[in-house]
Image (cartoon, rainbow, N blue to C red; front, side):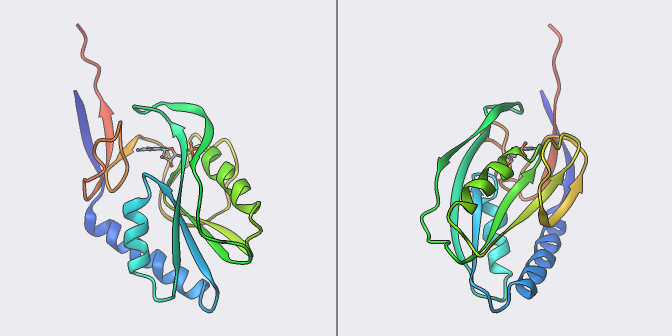
Length: 177
Ligand code: 5GP
């Protein structure tokens, strides 16, 4: 048995994304912006974010494994899909769904820096702080929370719930035999 507790409704997410896009459009005006989404969780966020930008942008994706099936971390962070665009001397913005421990983003930042971009920033829809284990230079955060396992708007639990238009906290209830 599991319960979905509402955290952000679709219209609230829309406003958050719009305001982040406005800030990014101002900050990166006149620069060569490449946004890199972290698969799979950031795919809906990135798709909405770029459509609210008022500046040109190039888009790519990479994929890292930090969580296995369910809600538990598998520990080590492994890159399973790399970028294909040339980011040398470009201004890169890494787009994440959630920064939790920070280990995934830091691993990806180290990797991206090896391509010698002009700059690398971090944009995350959710900044979840309770379990932070590594400091992350987050330039844009949509919603800050302490804890809870979130699903919806691209975020999954074992590949389910990504299609929900809002974001929910998933409470898994253990049924006693
Ligand atoms: P970190 O390395 O910061 O601990 O974890 C980053 C990744 O773990 C996120 O990109 C996301 O895929 C996954 N993650 C962390 N917290 C949550 C959560 O509350 N819900 C979901 N669905 N994924 C999460």
